[in-house]
Image (cartoon, rainbow, N blue to C red):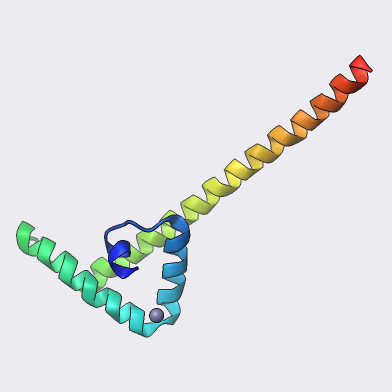
Length: 101
Ligand SMILES: [Zn+2]
C-alpha cells in the first residue's frame, strides 16, 4: 500500500485508511519515510533540487488529509443532492397522483 500511496494511486477510502493507520503505527510510518526517501530522493537527484525528507513527507501527508476532507465534502453534497431529488420526486409523484386520481 505504501508504494501506491507515494505514487498517488490509492482511492479516497484507501487513502483515509492508510493515513489513519500511519497515525497509529510507527513501523508503517517509518517504512513510508524510507520508501518516500528512495522515491523522492531519486527524483530529486534527477532534477537537482535540494531535498528535505521530513518536510516533504509531512507536506504530502497534509495534502492527503486535505484531499480526504474535500472528498468527504463532495460525498455529502452528492448525497444531499440525491436526497433532495428523491424528496421532490416523491412530493411531485404524490401531487400528480392526487391530481389524476
Ligand atoms: Zn502498520
